[in-house]
Image (tube, rainbow, N blue to C red; front, side, top):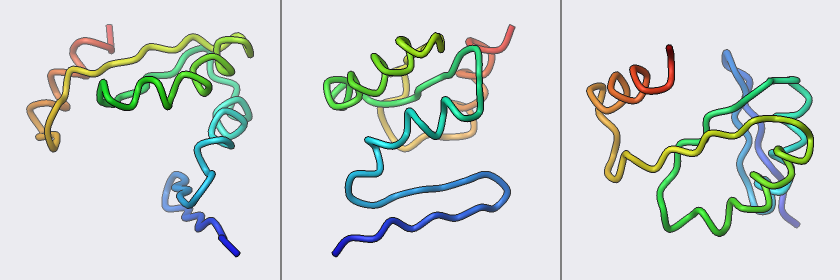
Length: 85
């Protein structure tokens, strides 16, 4: 039997087998107008159902695949300059 582990500190971290399937519900419950999904290109096909469900729920999704290695503070700062007006 698989059990997901949920951590609240200060946000929420959920991981475990099948937890990706529940992510759209977790995000939708927060009622954001849009979300930023930072990922890598090989995972895009796996994330398509999540992106489609969020879009169907009226949530704008911005996908960024520009970081291709373990992210540095510089990578984070560059990404924030791109996504935060």
